Image 1 (cartoon, rainbow over the protein chains, first blue to last red):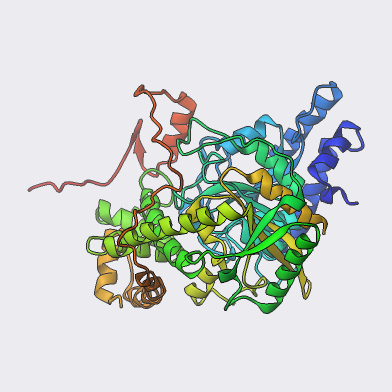
Image 2: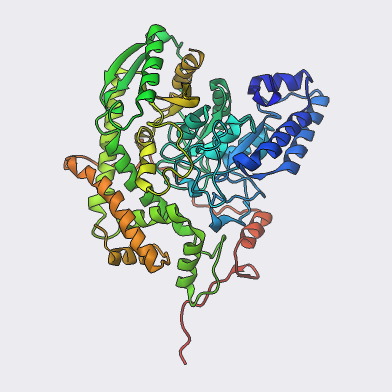
Amino acid sequence: MEIQNLTIKAIHQGLRNKDFSATELVESFLKRIEEENKEIFAYIFVDQEGALQQAKEIDQLIAQGRELPVLGGIPFAVKDNILVKDLPCTAGSKILENYIAPYDATVIKKLKNQKAVLLGKTNLDEFAMGSSTEYSAFGPTRNPLDKERVPGGSSGGSAAAVSAGLAVFALGSDTGGSIRQPASFCGVVGLKPTYGAVSRFGLIAMASSLDQIGPITRTIQDARTVFNIIKGKDPLDSTSFWIEKSDSKFNIKELRAGIPKEFFVKGIDPRIEKLTTESIKRLENEGAKIQEISLPHCTDYALATYHIIMPSEASSNLARYDGIKYGLSVQESNDLKEVYSRSRQQGFGQEVRRRIMLGTFALSAGYYDAYYLRAQKVRTLIREDFRKAFEKVDVILTPTSPTLPFKIGEKTKDPLSMYLSDIFMTAVNLAGIPALSVPSGKVENLPVGIQIIGKPFEEEMILKVGEVVEKL
Amino acid sequence: MITKKEVQHIAKLARLNMTPREEERFAKELSSILKYIEKLKEIDTSKVEPTSHPFEIKNVMRKDIPRCSDIETVQKLLKAAPLREKTYIKVKAILKHSE
């Protein structure tokens, strides 16, 4: 097996047994990035020097016979909306093209403590707004499995890097499917943790009541390893929160899995429906108890709710980009107000401006009750749907995406068609619960993911179910 | 559904400069998105409480004590500002001189 396709555990053992050095390992990844990144464009920035320096330190550690942390020497990638001290952080936007992060995000601090080796920053839709990574100001990422197609988004660079063997694992962020959908499109594993389970200190905020950081990996075990390192309460993020659920013995024969009937209707590619049904059937053959459930507010209504709440919060969060404190600034302006409005005109791309406009509209006087407040109320109904469903079942299974990875350019002309890519995923963010996308098969050589949704703080349960799917 | 005039008003609120062509395009695009969002009017929400946070957790407080950042971070933050003078971030004049 090629070194780039090894799991975290296998690399850890390889380093300890001195089968290869951390420097050799990192060099092999850098070489592969050099060969393939030009075409795939998974990375916006590669920190060659920093990665080799970190590898050297790991090799010294090993030579001294010191203990190697689980992620010690493991090469990884980070979505470029997560701050790494002294490295550029663009959020895929022109407005932050020359921005250098002054501090580390908490997730980065945790990975640095583990001595994991950062290879670079990955491409994303501008400010994580999109489902294809085509809205990056620096150009689209290509799906390594079919280079005419998108890798999904917005964490498309992270998913493509892991899928192409350009990193062992990557971090992404998920506001309405941005970890799960690209994981599904690139044939890898993506975990969106419970809201608050992972600190967001140092994540460039999009929609604060929805955003979560999570891992993208090639195996479930790798996702578990990374998640267990990055999770937990952080004094620097007052929304972070963690409850340790007692680790009860998992038995597939006692698993109750719900299939929401509303998710298997119009709009879904029949081949994806067939494949998902087959996966569910196989789980049933293993002994899982499958039952039909209803989540009446969790497809179309959830997507509509999401497209009020997300842009509203984003329009507020993005008010900070004003050309004063950092980022692109148009000084050829007549007054201060013009500095704001012209910097924002030149710095933000189409999709970001669309969402700022939509959010500003939904929050503006006269429309607040009809849009924002109504959406918050429907959000309560969505939470209720899940609460009721989880009285009867332990996990909920759906396809991750209603369509196969689409062609580059196919959906950029019609914003609404792009939004519909996330129809099975946004309800999960609105309810704050964890969900996993696991590869469940292929249609015409293109990967299809199955989404496993769990109760709050029961990441371990969905990972266990994911492992069963992984092995079938 | 959204007129060009409304687009101009929202753009002003959002501090976004816009060309007339962009105003027209935004009017069209926002209208089609809003049409999709209108679906929510089918739901009776008269007896539903709004959700602003997915879980019922209490607000997190800390003591109101200033925390000092190290000088290196302060310098990095200042360095990020496009216009500055000494340890200040500089902006264009807000008030006009009277003659």
